[in-house]
Image (tube, one colour):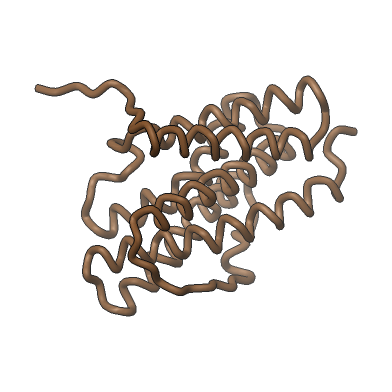
Length: 194
């Protein structure tokens, strides 16, 4: 069986921890840049780190992990590159957790892509809505697209190799590399200007 409980569990917990920690920082940094008070900064940290995963868990019929246990590390930093690196790690790790749970639940190709992407970018989108901004995923260079491509890499790799570890790290690596290239080379999808 390609999806042993041991294989998915340790990868899921590892990626989830990485995603929670890095998106906590990324969300808090958004709040700091917007001049929010301590409660606002903490709220954005929590929403960004947990929002996408909660949506994913609800869709697959699970009690959201965030309602059971959540440990958040926070040390706000104001460096833009720090935010981008943390955000890149977060989207990479959370996309993997979404892909893992969707695949385990027997989702179709489309379902895996959808749940992986929601998990990867959902928390940040909710944080942007709370800040009354157009969600970054709708206007930022190459962002949600990286999550979609990474989830596709995961699905194809699982079908070909039946190896959850290889597929998870292929997904993680592909997203991480694409996001870094997008940041360094300012890669963007075509825009429609009126």
